[in-house]
Structure formats: C-alpha cells, structure tokens
Image 1 (cartoon, rainbow, N blue to C red):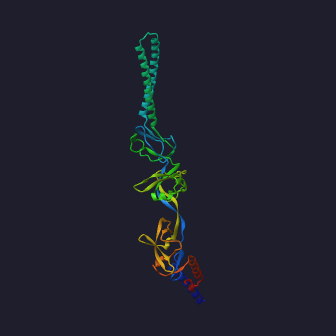
Image 2 (cartoon, rainbow, N blue to C red):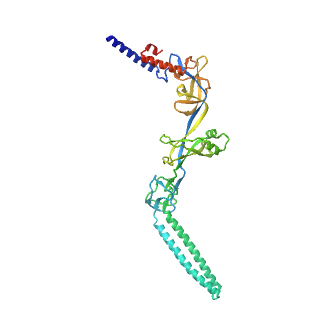
Image 3 (cartoon, rainbow, N blue to C red):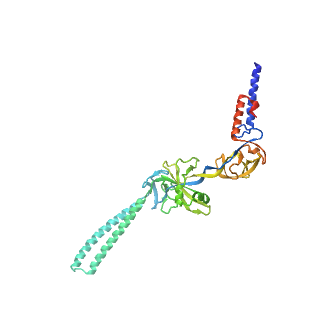
Amino acid sequence: MKRNKSFSFGRVTLLVLGVSILTACGGGQGGMKMGDNEFTVKAVEFTSSNQVTKYPATIKGLQDIEIRPQVSGFIVKLCADEGASVRKGQALFQIDPTQYKAAFDQAKAGVAAAKANLETISATMANKKMLHEQQIISDFEYQTAINNELSAKASLAQAEAAYSSAKQNLGFCTVTSPTDGVIGTFPYRIGSLVSPSVAQPLTTVSQIGDMYVYFSMTEKQLLALTKSGNSLKEEVAKMPAVKLQLADGSMYTAEGKIDAISGVIDQATGSVSMRAIFPNDQHILRSGGTGNIVFPYTMTDVVVIPQASTIEVQDKKFVYVLQADNKVKYTEIQISSLDDGRHYVVTGGLKPGDKIVLDGVQKLKDGQEITPITPAQKEAKFQQALKDQSEGNIATAFK
C-alpha cells in the first residue's frame, strides 16, 4: 500500500516536472519549438489589407459667432449661463440702458416737436399761397413761406433719424444671440465696462447641430486618393466615411463625411487642409475640441506577417527566409508605418512564395540549416505533447 502511494507521488512529481520543463522550454503554443532544429515556416503571399490612418483634428461648430457689444456701458445682467443652449434672438447680456433710454425719450420728443412745427408752418404756407394767388403778398414773401415748409420737413426727417438711432441704441443694450447654439465662456461679468472696441468678445455662440472637423494630410497622401482624373468634387463625393476618435480615446458613434478639401497646399508644411462634417444630435462634440480623424485605407499587393517573426536592428526590420537547401537567409524588409500591434504590412523585401520563419527567430543565425515544419504540423505536435502529459506519458511528451 505504501509502495503504491510512493509510486503515485513519484508519477505526479514527474508529471509536474515535465510541465515545468515544457513551460521553461517555450511550451506555450506561440513560442514552442518541437525538436532541436525544427522551426515553423510559412509561405507568404500578396493580399490586400484594410488599414486606418489617424490624423490630428480640431472640432469647430458650423459657425462660431463672436458676440460683441454695439454700445458702451456697464453690464447689469447676465441673461444666460456659460455652456447653455440658446435660441436665436434670446437675450444674453443686459447693458445699463439709462443714458440710452434718456436719449431715446429726447429723440422721441424731438420728433413730436418737429411734427408740430411742420404742421404750423404748413398751415401758414397754405395761407400765404392763397394770399399770393390774390396778389396780396409779394413773390418773395410767398417763396419764404415755401422755404420755411421745406426746412420744417427736413427738421422732421432729421428728428426721425435721431429717433431711429436712439431706438436702435436702446435695443442694443440687450445683447441677443444671432443664432441657435451653445454659449462659450464669459470674460466679462456684471459691473464690467464694455464697448464696441473691447479686445475680447462678450462670448461666442457656436452652432453645434452639425460639427466641422478639420484635419490635414500630406500632398502625397491626397494625390493617392484623388489621382483618378476625376474632378475634385467627384473625388470628394467618392471618399469613404470617416470616424472620429475623441480626446479620451473613445470612438464617436456617428460617422462623418469629408465635404471640403483646400485648393491650396501649405508650403511651410506640405500639407492640405481637409474638412469633414459630423452630426451632433446629442451635443457631445463641442467647438474647440480635439481628436483624431480615423481614415479607412486599403493597401493592395502587400504581405502581412506576424511581428514575432521579425528582428529589429537599428530601426530596420529583418526576417529569416528559407532557402532551397533548408538554410535561412537574413533578409531586410520594408514595412508600412501602419501598425496594429500584432502584424506588420510588408511593402518590400519579400515576394509571393517566400517562406519565412514564424517564431524562434532570435535563436537563428544567417545561413543556419533548419528542419522546417508547417504551422499545422506544429499544432499537431503541440496537441500530442499536451495529451502525453495529461496521460502521464513523460517519455514521449517531449520528443
């Protein structure tokens, strides 16, 4: 009985030891090598790869309207709060109207006086006309009456203009929103003296029903998208929908559409300004925000390989290519800047049919002879090794 327990304990110990050895030797499926000189190889082939390119972007409202005072005075009331949604014509600020109300009342009285004066002079002129027709008064006296009436009419027009100006200035004391939108910050508060010449606007109202997102791409990238020979308008219409990555790294749910491309290339940067429009029904996007435009891009006639199959030396990438005599050749490759963290898109250095070593490349040397196996063979050996271990066949588990 003791002997059986000892045998069982020894078997378990040996099994644990075997698992430990397998783990220490790279027993994980991604890095396991069956046999002393066996390496997994795979032939590469041309394919297309759907990639995305990110461009730093700035978010703007369809309109960002600066709100500036049109009269001078002290702010006596804030009619809305920062960040609030407002409607066209809604009051935002109240400027002290005292002096403008006085000017309005004075202008209004001036109009009334001018009208009364005109009525008096017009009645006099009518009387003078009758006397002149009866040749009771001279031509000079009659002409003087006519001139007095013209002068009274001009005085009335002048008074009405002053009244209109005073009424307008009084109206300007209530600063209203010129459009529907969202209010920005308030650099001036109650008690601040403002005027049409202040450096900063009272605030900014942004239309945010839809939002513009501005970004730039290089001239070369733009040519790659628009070199079909069609008009720029046609090319813009054919461009795919784009996504927006917000400042916190999350993706905005709605897709946008590129609707404008600048006709001028910035000579300082060699870039072209572009604009996409995004719906903003939930008012998540705010004018002045930042993010990244995520642009879908399809690469054709490229090779996609695992990053684990490469070696980096001085910012250059290399792979081991299997030769006809089962020796490996240390080969430099060129890769795209697009990187998903797991694969490289190879743009040069490999051709269809080339067989590369997929793993264990750090142990290889240029010209080394190996025993190549396929990924399927590697998987089969791995599964058999796991089976042998689970069944306690330690003698065959590591062959």
